[in-house]
Length: 208
Ligand SMILES: [Zn+2]
Image (tube, rainbow, N blue to C red):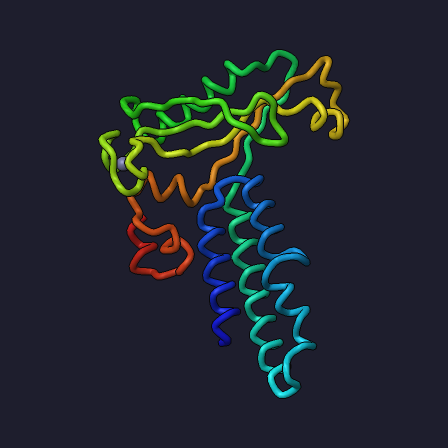
């Protein structure tokens, strides 16, 4: 494969690995599969190449595109968003739910911290961090020596989002949070590389 296309594919897949919520997925899609992405620009420039190279590079480019689209679809499926909408829902409900879910999964002793954050569809937005499951907060490569793992983004659903869904934000509120199920599973079972989950290797799958 031409090295430029190879680089585009590797870089895009590495970036996709780092996308852990729907917002990050949209940003990734715009950066790597939109008309202005390096891949599409390269495909658009095919006409400038010598005739004898066009077919070969065009074929490789389309293969990269299909691979990226498939990886995106897989990731999209893995990220699930949980939401609650009702007449008396506050940030405390979100906090209680998140802390309880994480304690059930990772044990009551595992510390959870909430920080304010920004996402376009929630206001206010928060990020739940989990005390690192590898170093217990001392600092290691997985947590980039912070002692914490960013794990669940969420917040109170923006009133305009409710309005767009036909729900009156004067009477209803809601919270939402998203989590990559693959990432949660990797942390819970101490799986070193998230890609093992997608390789369908029975020696790996039989362990669960
Ligand atoms: Zn750590």
